[in-house]
Image 1: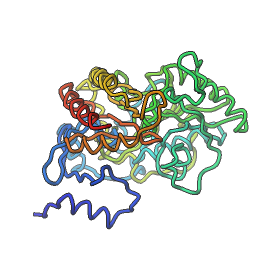
Image 2 (image 1 turned 30 degrees about the vertical axis):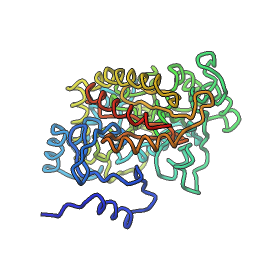
Image 3 (image 1 turned 180 degrees about the vertical axis):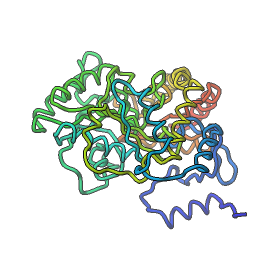
Image 4 (image 1 turned 90 degrees about the vertical axis):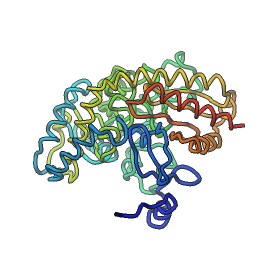
Amino acid sequence: MKKKLTSKQITANYKEFLYPSVITYYEEPLALVSGKGNYVYDAEGNEYLDFFGGILTVSVGHCNETITNKTIEQLKTLQHVSTLYPTSPAGELAAKLAKITPGKIKKSFFTSSGTEADETAILTAQRHTGAQEIIALRHCYSGRSILAMSLTAHAPWRISRTLVPGIHHAVAPYCYRCPFHLQYPSCDMACARDLEELIRTQTCGTVAAFIAEPILGVGGFITPPKEYFKVAVEIVRKYGGLFIADEVQTGWGRTGNKWFGIEQYGVDPDIMTSAKGMANGLPIGWTAATPEVADSIKGLTICTFGGNPVSTATALAVIEYIEEEKLVKNAAVVGDYLYQNLMALNDKYKFIGEVRGMGLMRGIELVTDRKSKTPNPQAVLKIFEETKKNHLLIGKGGLYNNVIRITPPLNITKGEVDTMIKTLDKAFSTVK
């Protein structure tokens, strides 16, 4: 039997043999070796309640037996053939997706990551429109390839010195820190209406696409007003562009009551992308489009790991499990309960600037004081260490590293929310 490594040994391997740019949380990295349900365990057997879910990726709980059994069944049947050969899992998954996607979205292209999914979406839009230029949002994150980093408008993640031209960044619908210093709703959606000025002054007058996350994930769960996308998308389409909804973090019921985040805004995208929670942790990327848009991709294309039988069988199992267990509804019900409890903390602690988000995707922006709204990343670091001590895992993000991200698996319970709130309250009380 292979000898089990200690946390220190696991961490030592990381430090010696991995790129140092592979970041880890906490002053002393937390080495995890197993998981079950909504809990994970370190090498010494300590249990942690997981309210981050591997960055919104463990959507239905760690090592979910229903899902794992179907993954194993597929592993024993057919593991890989590439996109050169049709397989039953990929075809069944694509057919299922066509039934649950909004509007006229129907045809899928599978890859193995969100980065690849966004790349495929951009290529599709450019081929369909014949235009080149792309509009993304400030504070957004799209991945780690050269194109994805060029789309990303978040300096710490744009580590490449060679960026793709023809990408323009619109102001984000960040009401808490409105770039126009206006107040919602009297602002009349100035951030969305500015898209027209951007197109007329920074592009050649036609654009290929506008890509946006319904809630900006890495950006700190910036949640646009309900009217934002209707105004923004109408302007983009006026100038020939398509709308790409980046559902890498907001998809699969995460925002509650709807399968996809963009459905909360009543707008049908021309193209969608996703990954993360789609297969509960197995690598998968997904781009989907309307038939006329998808048919614009001509010529040879292949994705070696795209539509992998194991990943697609697992993704189908995840979607069916979410349906059977009514987890889209659970995300709404427990998400509202979570929000109410977070707002109670908001009333108690004056360094909380804003609580935002939807469903089981909640952000807490921390500031030094509410009047100045000065970002307080030091408080986040303090809270992170305290919650770790008390066996709770949470996430963080935002351009200023001052946003706590709360994203448990979709089958989280109100009792587990109570435990999390109690631990978070204790951690908040240590912040001076």
